[in-house]
Length: 183
Image 1 (cartoon, rainbow, N blue to C red):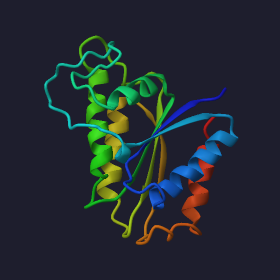
Image 2 (image 1 turned 180 degrees about the vertical axis):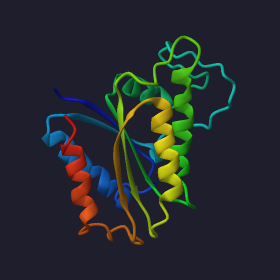
Image 3 (image 1 turned 30 degrees about the vertical axis):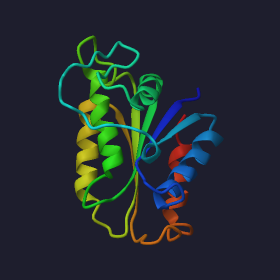
Image 4 (image 1 turned 90 degrees about the vertical axis):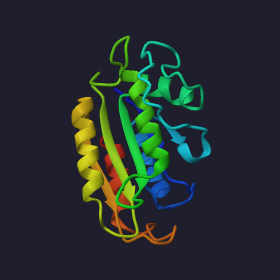
C-alpha cells in the first residue's frame, strides 16, 4: 500500500546538499509507489510560534496565525511519513525547519491530538560541512518518541562545504534506499 510522504525541506538552497538528499529520497520513495509532497520552507511565509495555546487542531487552519502553514497542516494531517530535511546550522536544525516544527504544535491543541501517533513514521535527512550531528539526532529522536512516530532513521551527510560536494557520496544512495524502503 502506498504511503503519503511529506517532506519539510529546511534548506535555504534549492540546489544545495540537503536538497540533493531530498531528491534522492523522493526518487526512491516514488519508485516504491509512494506519493511525495515537498515543502521548500525557505520560499514560504511562516512566522514563529507565539506560544499562545490558542490553536484548535480540528480547524482547517489550526493555528491563530494565518500564513503559509495553512498549506502544510492538511498535508501533515493526511501524511503517513513526515521527513525533516535540514542542513546543520550551529549544532542545530535550520531556523526554517525549527519554525515549521514549532508551529506543528497547533495540531496537538484543544480539539484532539491530530499530530501524535496515528501510525505515522518519520525520517531525518541532514547535510553539514562538519560531522557534529549528535545534538540534532538526540532532539529528533526525542521528538519522534514524544509524537509516537516510528523512527525510520537518519541519513547524515557530513563533509559538504560546497553545494556540489555531496553528489558522489554514499549518503545519496542511502537517502534513495531509505525512500525506497517505505511501503
